[in-house]
Image (cartoon, rainbow, N blue to C red):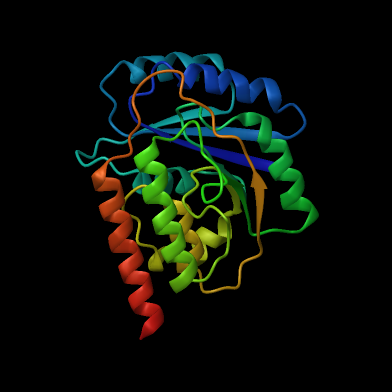
Length: 234
């Protein structure tokens, strides 16, 4: 199992070093690379990343200079520059615990999955690492997705997932590729019946910095859902 780990981030100077070290400590059973895609940070993250790149092998940094920040575009840059056929996506804020990576890899191999989702139980329990408003908006959007687009995972809003690169390459011309929810885009833009499994995770509190979730995130997601729902109904 060879794994490309893609970490999109923006202004995470207090978190990314801890996350990278944690990944390297926990992943000693598989061959992997890490691609960090920085979305034009301005808090000192860039300097931290350059130091990390010189310290760790198989770590590469991509610096996006686009004035409009977009996690989906950052993920796409990571996918295009990944050398392995299995890609794991996780956030750079340390809320995704690397302890689940091997569990996701084992599930991926055991069931020959197309996608394994690190899934939060957003609908039935309070997620400590999420704000009250953010979780409740997410719950509403998930219910809409399940009704109109069919339930394929318990957490289509997750930013922590493992997938076959071909899911992206076969469908990239159909992807919305705007906003902050690339998993839903990959799942609901696919022309194939994907084999998707969930691994339940505990979402951690961020160590520092600020959440990037804001009204713009949910507006983009709303447009994505309208596009996909309309296409399904036609």
